[in-house]
Length: 314
Image 1: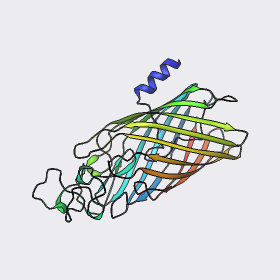
Image 2 (image 1 turned 45 degrees about the vertical axis):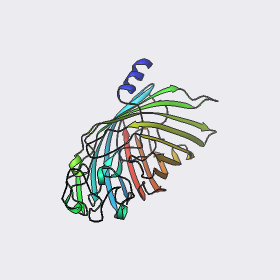
Image 3 (image 1 turned 60 degrees about the vertical axis):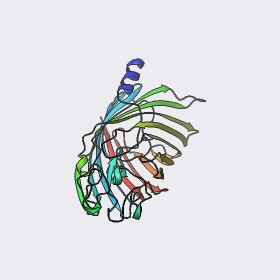
Image 4 (image 1 turned 180 degrees about the horizontal axis):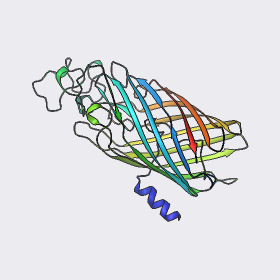
C-alpha cells in the first residue's frame, strides 16, 4: 500500500503550494492521517491579492478555488479547480498563482518605469516579441494579446491543480511528522488573457511538522517546481520554503504565522517573500472554517492577500 502511494505522488509531480493561487504554505488544519469515517472533503477558499509586481501600476487578482479531497490512511489526494479574475494593465500574467511580468519576453526590472531589460521609453514595458518596427505601446505583452497600458479585467477558468501527500514518518515523542507531497498544474487557463502560461508545471516537496506540548506546533515545508516555458517568456524553475509556528487557543482553534520565500521566476527580479497569518476553526467533524492575511516583504510579492474559506467532510 505504501509503495502504491509513493508511485501515485511521484506521478502527480511531488510538491506543495499554498493553495492555488495562493502561494502560501500547506494547510495546517488537517496535518496527519484523518479518522476513517470521513474520507472526502469539498472546500472553497476565495482570495484577493493586490500589488505592483515590479511594474508602475497595481494589478489585482481574485480567485475562487474549489477543491475536492480524498483522504487515505497514509495520505491524501486532491483536485483544485480555480476560477480567476485578473485586473491588470496588460503587463502581468499568472504563473503558479503568482503575477509575473510578461514584458520583454520575461525581462528584469531594469528598464524604464520598471520595464523589462532592453525596453525603450515608448514600449510601455512590452518591447520585442517579433514586432520589429512597431511602437512598443502597440505590441502585445508576453503570452497575452493585451496591449501595454490598457486597464483590463479578464475572468475565466484558472489552471487546474492535482496534488497528493504521503506520510513517510509518523509523529512520535521525539520524531516529527514527515510527508512528501505532489503537485501537477494542468494548463487549463487561457494564456491569451493573462490567466496562465498554457504550459504544464510540476515539482517535488516535503512537509515537516511537530506538536510541542498541548498547544504549540512548528512546521517547515520546502520544495522545487519545474516551470513550463511558454514562447516569449524566459521563466526559470523555482525553489521555495516556509517556516513557522502555530498555537491552539482551544482544541479546535489554531492560529499560525509563517515566513515564505519563493525564487523569482524571472532572472533579475526579487524573490517573493511574505509573512502569512492564518486562523482555522474546526466547528464539527464535518465543517471547518479558515482565513488568512499575508503581507508582502519584497517587490516581487503581492502587497497583501486576504482569504477566507470553508470545507465540508463527508
